[in-house]
Image (cartoon, rainbow, N blue to C red; front, side, top):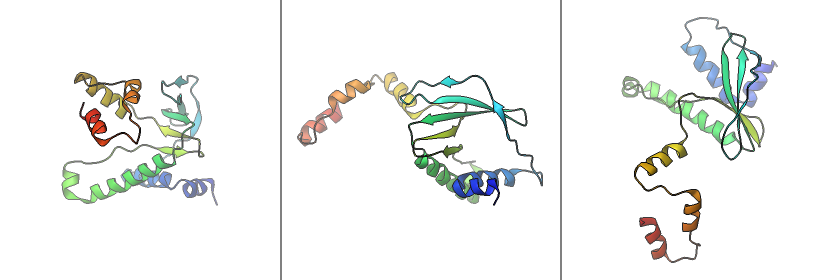
Length: 168
């Protein structure tokens, strides 16, 4: 069994990515880039787990950016991307969805084990927390994590008290 077949068995999502790429190609045989090296610069991102943003050199001369996430199990993220690929297939089959060009932007997620993995870097995106924080601040209803933790009541607190805090 070839190494490519072994990777596809271990990571079925990768096979789906290849099939999608091949289907969209107008060439009968497409040249696939392979890893030719690593860029020297590594950016440590500002979040709890301190993920690393790295760039790989492809044999085609292009740079491919990835994020290495330590201390994070990416198996659910990988399954979500597989699910999104399935949704995209359904959207492509529906005439109205095709007309409206509906699709979910997907990206590669490769769990290496239960504790770390690699995620394809997608430019010009923002995290949900960043977007929500900005919207809350614009409306004057932003609370920091510390302030939110102060509002957490014990499970035994009366319902009326929980409702009052929720409405505030």
